[in-house]
Amino acid sequence: MLNALVAALLAVLPLAGPGTIYATDDPFTSERTQWFRDARFGMFIHFGGYSQLEGEYQRSDGSTCQDAEWIMNKCRIPTAEYERLVKSFNPAQFSAKAVVDTARAAGQKYIVITSKHHDGYAMWPTKVNKWSLRDHSAFDRNRDVLAELKAEADRQGIKFGLYYSTWDWHDPDARSAQNFARYKARMRAQLVELIDGYDPALLWFDGDWDTDNPPNPWTKQDGAELESFLRAKDPDLLINNRISKRAPGVKERRVVDGDFGTPEQTFPSAPIDGQLWESCMTIPSKWGYAKWDKNFKSATTLTRNLVDIASRSGNYLLNVGPDKFGRIPAPESDRLRAMGSWLARHGDAVHGSSVASWVADPAWGAVTRKDDKLYLSVYDWSNSLHLKVLEPFDVTSARVLGSSQHVAVVKAGDGYDVKPVGAKTNDVATVIELTVRGEQAAPPGTGEGLRAQYFPTNNWTGTPTTRTDPSLNFAWRFDGDNFSVRWTGFVQPRFSDTYTFLTVSDDIAKVWVDGKLVVDASQAHQVRVDKGTIALQAGKKHAIRVDYAERTGEAHLKLLWSSANQNQQVVPEEQLYTN
Ligand code: H79
Image 1 (cartoon, rainbow, N blue to C red):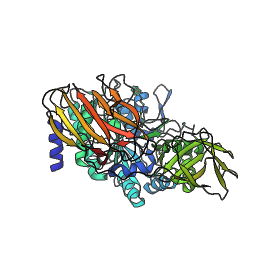
Image 2: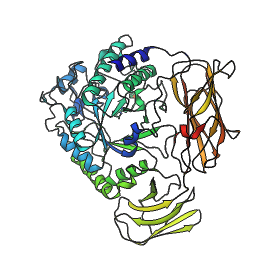
Image 3: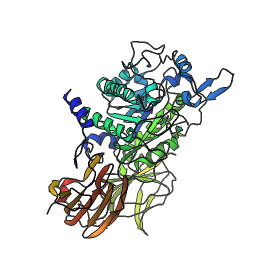
Image 4: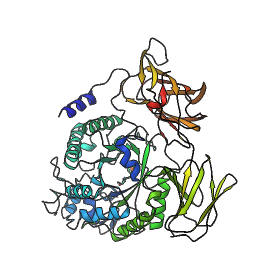
């Protein structure tokens, strides 16, 4: 009650000048996100009223139109007609146990199910309207698939997340700029039902694009207000970036929205600068069930995708589309089980593992790192695998997982030749585990942050107010035009590495280290990532200065770093000193 009140106040009260209502912790390191960063593999479930149509719509003229979860929109099915078709939806064979068993057998650590897709149909007994599995179907009125799934997920130790589309084709107020506030109130009421009723660990929003078919009045401000409301209600929630809105014609999403980025049907070739990420992909081509959709990716492709994604510090959210009876199609569960049987032997290469920045990406597979282990997942097996080394380390032992064959590791050229003597153990990826020893980390620092001077102008003039900021991790968003900040002090790294300093800024940011201009984002810009590198010495205090200015619009400033030994993170308080 009090939380809701505070959140409501925060959502409407503009803060004057610098302050923050939006910045959270550092998702790269916080306890809140730990399960997600370790999980690497999750199950997406697209299940809704559209599942009843099985991907096909017969028009009155006898022609057929095919799509899946978009069928209402793409096949231009009138609302009344779509409602009539969905009325007979009866997924009586939905089994939460079967779904969670499948996820667990696959090695998936979390599930995210569509509570409401773009068609607006609620998969739980919402009290907000009658357009739901409870009130508009032929399904048992005593059953609640979300409740069943949540209970089973808890029982099996699988994290539970919910997808929710902010774009809505069914609610007439959702496409009306004039009545949009009424839709937003209903949306918020539904999200409160979902959080109070099903305690999700993660919310996965969708529908952030600008379109007229039907119109989507959702704005960045709406997203920011909803995000701060949700975080006040449940500070542990993970939220994806699509809670925001993409401006007309803008393809890229911004790294300042939500906790993680959401590449769809693709994945990046390196870690994403400035944000955690999770690629969502399908097994056939569509998300929702379509009986004609038979172009299934192989278990080998899917498993290698997972390893590639882990090697870039991302997560793989792999989708299943239960049929109208509620069953995961056998070609999908078969592939998931095949992935799980590979993971049963080789899971250490994926779960809890991340980018291996000591080495270059090899052509023969992918490399991941967990603590003192490097996992070489070999797709193209050979008895001499070259590993190009970017940061020196020693190899103390080597073995092939699931095999007793000897593996020699010899220095060669710009790195090592890894030489297993035997055959591959399987055709998906044979994993060579190297036990390694790199540079010893200097002790964690004892810093308390940088000295901050906040100026009442946008050009570091006038009389500043001063304070100590523990880290530079701000999202002032819509508040506080025309101010500037100068942070000064020292940064003390734990490794002797070439560090990449990275700013997320809007409007202007500059970073000097040891007097050298490392990041120069001095042209006013919207949210942007900039970076530069400099060699630092472990344990040494290097002088640092960060200048930041905000003119108009949103205000953002984050300072992150990464190196061969240090995965990307907001530069932590302990490594920052005022003197
Ligand atoms: O739920 C799954 C998909 O149904 C949904 N996201 C995943 C997780 C999704 N739907 N569409 N897309 C993703 C891609 C977006 C297509 C678009 Fe457009 C092209 C949006 C803007 C241009 C179609 C044409 C919609 C508006 C105009």
